[in-house]
Image 1 (cartoon, rainbow, N blue to C red):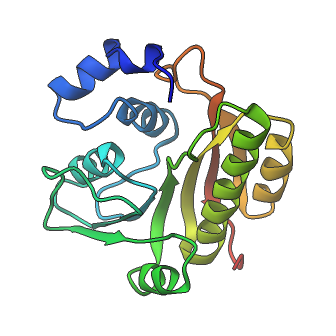
Image 2 (image 1 turned 90 degrees about the vertical axis):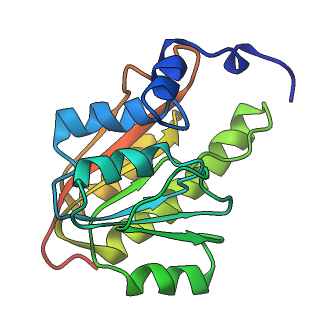
Length: 202
């Protein structure tokens, strides 16, 4: 990949490293949690596409030893991401084996996904790949979340964002888009949030 400004540590990256997080992405989840109250002590949380583990670390710190974090990615977590209430699964989130293992460890109070596709630089291709990840995350949200559970997923901004929000409104009491201030100004990523999963949705 060509060199770009992403390689230079900015304010958020430096802050993340100084606070013991593997990446700057933690502040996106932190802001969403502060605004929408996603995480509570005692929760069982599913973190999809979690490597290197900033969101997992934030979730573990928020739970303060209570509840459980099930974290899953094709790649391993950073070596210092650990916790007695952490279960890490390494594998493909679309595989039947991983899906069954994740289901067996649930149900969950919160499902989050900060997974990003391998980008090509072609916005159309990258957006389509991002949509595939959103569809995967939504499957987990509909399948393994408890009634009343919350959901957050990253998406590359495009015309289909409204399509996903429309389908999420069938599942959650509230569904909305939100772009945290820690997102890079040049980035076209944003997040979709589902709050309070409705009774009877499977």
